[in-house]
Length: 265
Image 1 (tube, one colour):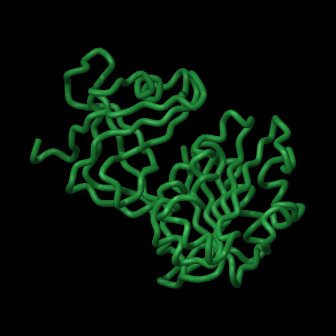
Image 2 (cartoon, one colour; image 1 turned 60 degrees about the vertical axis):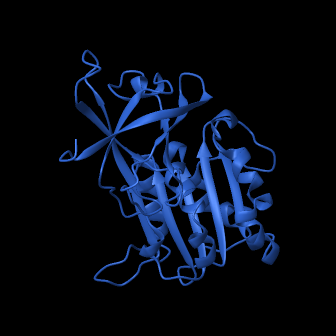
Image 3 (cartoon, rainbow, N blue to C red; image 1 turned 120 degrees about the horizontal axis):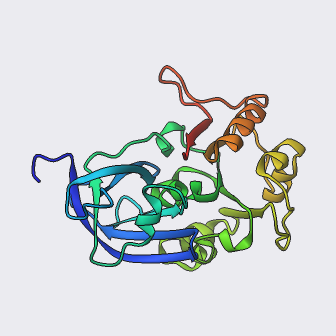
């Protein structure tokens, strides 16, 4: 095991958000595993017919946990015909889950110069990376204000909503809200259900017609705003086009940009 590219970790908790559809899994964390908030890990299971064999089926999952936490947490959707997620959802505390030793990904705040406003736009389980980023105090120190937008189909899919709404009461975040009560603007948006105070629309529609800025009370200004996109490919493609027309672009040749994008499948 010492020469392996992965470690064997133990499931400690499974939380079901939507039965048969959305869940989170917590596992132990190898002390040597280091990552930046926003990165992802390759998570493995053995073949379905050989539960005690080495892992052969691997998938990428963003860490929900913060870099300083002593556990790892992942948020997943169940793909009914999938070879991995249905089995992951069925794990119980005490079961094994394998984690590759090296993290991956560049959806991290060091892609941006500090200051200005940070916009975190996600659909579905693309929220995962942002939870890690927001559980890291360095994020709150680096930006004037943070806008978190989570697009889903229905309210039941707003995983972690209660935690997000309680952050202003938590000691780790309270001082930021004392300095600015609007330090974090949280915008849950559903496309198939009307939520109080929120339009029933796709995120890209809200970007295009200006309503997203109205809801946030902030302007998408390429001189001051830094934007992360994480979610389904259609949203990413459409949002990138809309934002590029407004002056947003990834960094290049060592020059920080104002847009970072990660496909979530």
